[in-house]
Image (cartoon, rainbow, N blue to C red; front, side, top):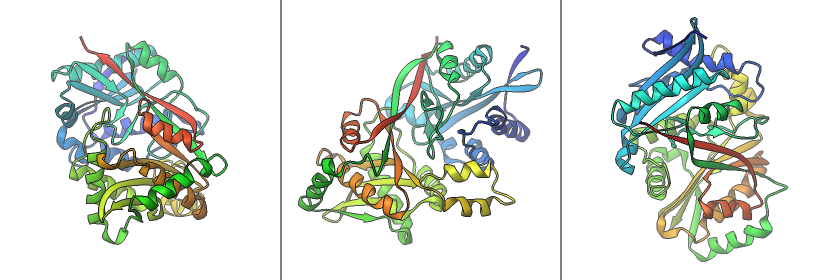
Length: 372
């Protein structure tokens, strides 16, 4: 192999960076492509708010002019300030089954972050835990849910062969109408809702700006002690809300209030990956028609995130949220779904999933490597 590594410096380079997975996963029935335009927007300074507090480098590995791998290296200054860390990250890692190519990509990413004083390289992160992250370790014969990654099984070997070790595992649980146990949590959730003056209401799309502010405040407060969490800026939250709005279903998003004050929320989305798979990265010329057609065929949801402020944790509000979603989703056409991800050592959330009758279905891994 005549291997060369070079940075992405032009629009043509960026296009090749984004398109490479389409070639790598061609014919794979489970990989789901993002929209090409959206991927370019995420990776471009000035078009996505992540770049306002981060340094990002994109790199291509080539063999005789043919791309064999790609990677991003980034320094998330918000993360390092929040956690008092010196951690750099890698993401958007895709590679042929070649340890030589993979190790060269990781070495380049390590050099990029080490040059700014970082002592650890962590990933995969595209770009942070607020977006898509983790390496899939099992269930390679299933299509991932929306905003969850997919990769070949050999990626684990390539990453560990480059000297990385486990930092944390992220767990996902499968739920459907047959496995969900109302006997276990339904009555408990009802008692919690009745006795605690908690009121659940759907997100009001007619007052979206105010609702986004409520969810953002609860999210940043509820998640602040979680491993790897970084508070989202107003610009990042607004950007994500704008991106989610076209696919969101207000019947799957709830805010909990106590004495009129917001104390928690749950966000679920229809699994739009079915639509993205059919669109194959392109919105035009017929993508909108495809989206409208295939959207009607979505039958599953992903419970993306839930947040409860500190004062109301361990009071059963999580069961109230889950019970409401489990009762509602089958009646509006979604008989199954995925809960996740959940940190492997978040005993409260994992126990709640198990008590609902959820099945541990997928495991994702975040890796660390000390830079010398």
